[in-house]
Length: 540
Image 1 (cartoon, rainbow, N blue to C red):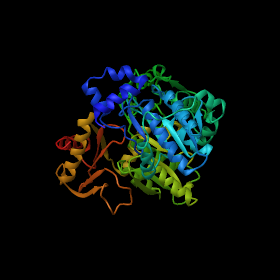
Image 2 (cartoon, rainbow, N blue to C red):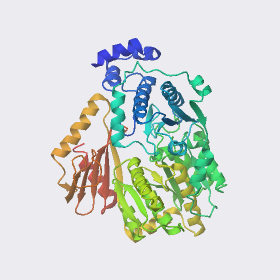
Image 3 (cartoon, rainbow, N blue to C red):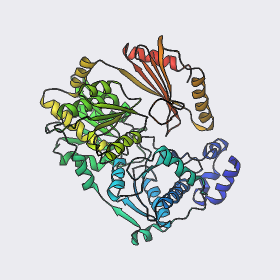
């Protein structure tokens, strides 16, 4: 069906969106209807609005009906856990998904209010569900929302399961989806509101390491789901000197104080740093809207130092291995291939095994699952990715900023007791093991033309791969899409390593119209990063 036919059909049938559809100009039509919103391993993610390439009740309903058809082939009595974040329409989409499932006779457990993504992972495991749905667009700008699907282990669905679900989704007509009356479904107990905050936090607390509590903290939930649960956690763990950034303290889908509510970005933490400076706090902690990522800035003699995702991963590895009292034999650390190699150096110095996986926390979750199947889940110490995601323990299967906030607070307090800041500890690690410089840069390719441009760019790099990285000969080239010797699933990722240890990794984002470039400079510092980036722009 071409764009005009899709447009005409939606104008006729999508009655609740008719005014928005009728007002579209030609460019808006193309962007809204040139494709179906892609259902990948991260589920759906897109701009909120009318059209097949948008997040709305019709795309949510279609995805949910496809998931229902998939689940009913696997079980006679499947059940699904559902939660949602603070974005526009998140609660509405969550309730609509539950109503579609109810129409199919599928029981759902829906969180009593907005909750973090790791909480949803916990819900799946706690209730023994066959799947989970999290309505979130994580750290994307306010115009986005999304629909993430989890498997029965509480991990985002695997590539194979996502492909199978997609087959069912593709067989669903947008306008044939039926939903039960939500209130009636609740009355009949096929939809249940639930609250397992106590059970979830108790599991988080089992991962506690430090005992010191004398530390001053500024916290920002960035108007997201961490708003209640993180302060509750900090209070219950004995951290009493906590100040919350008032402008970002409550849920707000407009994210008015930071258009890009991502704790990876300095701008998102600007208000928090300003408040920390006024109060003299030891550390600023920020979580993204669905509270699965954590960013931090630590007080130094010169002000506040932002800690990168790679740096926090290294700090946590060093802290856990040097402070944890019940370390297992043959401990395991898991990191993504785009995360710093320094993590491997530090972890191996403590005798740990380090496993590299593809980008995406579901791959870390798969490692935990395999260890669990062998009865060795206690071997898993930490999983992390450079994009500010961390997990210790197997109680959930996704990155958990609630847990990370607890560990970072404990780590800060323990080192403060020793007269050190996290900045001091980090510099000590660099002095002992050496320093790697990293930068992640995103190149945006929006719309139909952008999608084709992304494909052309990646095809061009494959055809003419770089022979050098800023003058240093490339000694290792990996195309994870065609690789046959690496023990990893195939993925659209290109990796180049130079003789001097510098690296260039290139991959399209799975959730945004971006090509991400990960640059590592083993020598030359930030200036070398600038040079490699300038060189990379020639083919991106």
